[in-house]
Image (cartoon, rainbow, N blue to C red; front, side, top):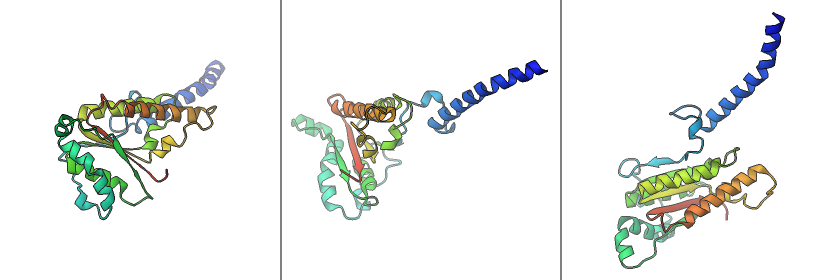
Length: 209
């Protein structure tokens, strides 16, 4: 009896650590619901709005912001008729950065662009890239752009992109910031490769510049 009691007491810490690890992995992969599992940790958390179904917002639904609408109209025209631009040797728009205080319609405007152009719309927050484990953020960036290429032409909207960008170059000795910087570098690499990312337009929003 004493032998089994001692063995049980020795095993309890290991069982606790394993259980805690499984719990954390399930939390990272979406709480264990919706088909999430430990193998989906590096998958993108972007929400996809398919064209013609989920994205039913247009510029008419966005009050004001006349100047912003005018500036972003070029992206809509390209997504509608990309061949016309490329035949004339025009430059493919890389995207746009929407800047303004919270509640000023940045997300709605981004959805309106997708609605006007009738293309798929990927939406996620900058904080969705950031995780405690090294390499997860960069993996999610790669998975996001892989999905976007498959749905091209499409729009990728990253809200609060400063959640990733603001940490670049700060306290490089801290692992958390190393992970953020790796994530940002991967994001910049993907955005830089627009030669192969034809038809993928990036819209980002931030409250600060």
